[in-house]
Length: 609
Ligand code: SF4
Image 1: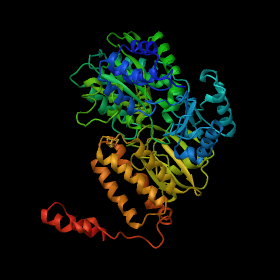
Image 2 (image 1 turned 30 degrees about the vertical axis):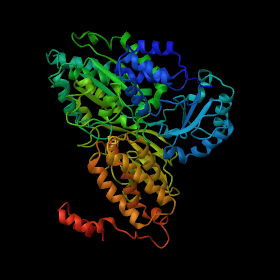
Image 3 (image 1 turned 60 degrees about the vertical axis):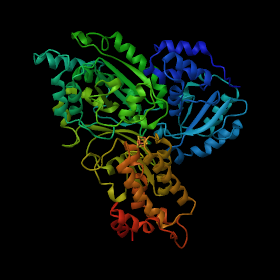
Image 4 (image 1 turned 90 degrees about the vertical axis):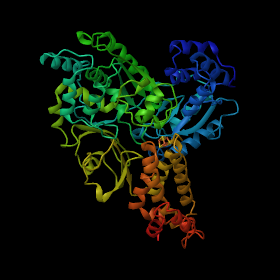
């Protein structure tokens, strides 16, 4: 049975290992939770005393993250990924199978405290779905046999470390390589090239970094690969020019967007390329410290990545006077996330790195001016940093020759769903979607979700569009839906995801995503009328203009897109004979709104009639 008396010696050791620093609070909480699987009140009190924060504040941080538990959660905590790709691959039936084998109800802890079985947002294993996490470690390619094996291991109370290693094997599924995924990158090669270029120009490294390297980045026209597509050279230049000399480089490895898993593969196969990218970013902007924010779902990568860092320190690619360059001192560390999608937003990620709740900041100021602990901070996506390493190595002109004029370079596409060969395809920007669909063996595709839940849904008429910022922008997630799929259910899955992941900071997003989720439930239950469909547009407008971050702003995208392209999937669920409300609140208040001159109420109603 779980105990409410925590192992205080363990907690003290964890706190000591992290120097009792508040900015390590999330890491402390993650590790303090490990022996019992939850954080008893006494553990929170002890940690609060150690870091010198009020107890309520520490509890508030712990309550923000899905993977931290303030109540007993079971010695084995099983969480099935409930992304649409997992559901399409049969995750619901497998979840029920495990529950019945372990005599536990979904979402509850077994009476003996042994196990809990629940679901969680996308775990980033869409190419080998269905998948689950057990005590934070991923198991993919689930089927009945693997579920039975997991049930037996739990029933026999076998320690996780003794489970067969094959269960935890995660495949890379690389289907097509390009410059990023090409084998043979020598660790440190990009750093050496950047230093050589600097020396060849007869320039010495100033405290504010290498203007030469920033120029090379600008020449490449590299756009950020996380989805927003900001010009990387401008961001780096902003950090380099900041007055504050204490600067940070942050790698955003928190790819929580449903259907996205490209960074997982880059980190597993090309860690040296990514770390070279972080180090040249530090060289460019004069940073001395770097932080990787690794999503909690990729915990299996933590130990191998730390081994790579240790090797790079031994080889002189991290530490003081890197590659013999005086004044070039840089090292980095890895922080683990704990199941909060919103932390993929750069400012929320920085808050989380500081040991706080991952709530997006008001901007301005920009992070390159006021970032980690108030210092200039460059936050870049994993793939962006890998591309930056190649630019340092081969030059900006070489990079700009790949892709299209406004979308230079190659792009990793994480392909999943109804296709023969799901996995990673590295293609030049500008590749037609149809070409990718043919290559991955898409089966009778009726729709493709481009860019994950917050991206865009396109139908067959748009498969000729090109994957690039000029036409169909994407963070790299490509999810195929064949003609048997119900696109209403696809949108409903994404809607539920946004409602669950809203951080709750803005009322508009907190309430709006819940309203949208409820509206989709009403449609699914056959209780909605045409009036309810009209409300989607109103909600979308409201969320777009009044949300603090992209989560709220894009929450309606899946519904808006599928309504426009697959309206029959909605209409066949509406109340037979239609439904008109007997009371129209807007029309009733019209006289008062016009009298007060509050807005263009009349025009609004005109548009609705
Ligand atoms: Fe949080 Fe949503 Fe507001 Fe973003 S838009 S800050 S997720 S409440």
